[in-house]
Length: 123
Length: 123
DNA sequence: TGAATAATACAACAACTATTTAAATAATAT
DNA sequence: ATATTATTTAAATAGTTGTTGTATTATTCA
Image (tube, protein in one colour):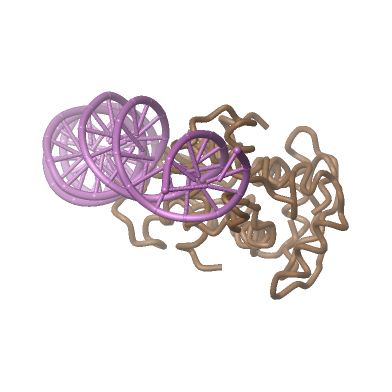
């Protein structure tokens, strides 16, 4: 992932409203939602939501598909996973022991596992 | 994780310089780096770096520890992992099949696994 | 065709962000 | 003590972002 793409993704998630929109779309998965549904669900004026949806799609975090007179939005989950890999890459210089130590030191440690798309990142 | 914390973390990673700083600290792990090392490594004027380090620590993404006349900064890796959980929570309404389908549809799919600190999130 | 609906584009303004330079603070070394 | 080094703070400025109305485009339905 290129840095510029990563920063524009983070920028687009730095607004509470855009974060709400994105998480909503992550939950919906492949089904996605049309703009009006999102506006109703989050109680936002259409013009304002449109502004934020544009920011999200320019960051490639959401995709748009025209559906009659509706616009259906979907979260780009593979891109989100690439971003996670980018952020956690080479964590603790690839020394799992150091990482685990850090995590055990912090409160609420409980390990679980998650599949991540490319490049094994030991965190 | 509270939304306001998540947005301030994303906001703090939305600057290319802050992202460089944070990823550098993630790589260093528990050892961390003092401000001057970071400034030299990234070739940034101290005053400007200080501004961005302040933003990162106000978002709790990095911790500071005084060390003589140096300030040692470290990435808060457990917080980063909490953020990842927050972002991926309830993905595809908890239906792994849909998620996998989305990921296979995208180019470059190759599954690996990563430990994540709390709450199993199926992505 | 004309009316209604869904969504985006534009303009204007207030609020915020990043960078630079210069000055201040605080710890160490001489 | 004085000088030096590491880092932060402050002030000034240029650029960017978010919100609200209003206007426009595009699609469906009668």
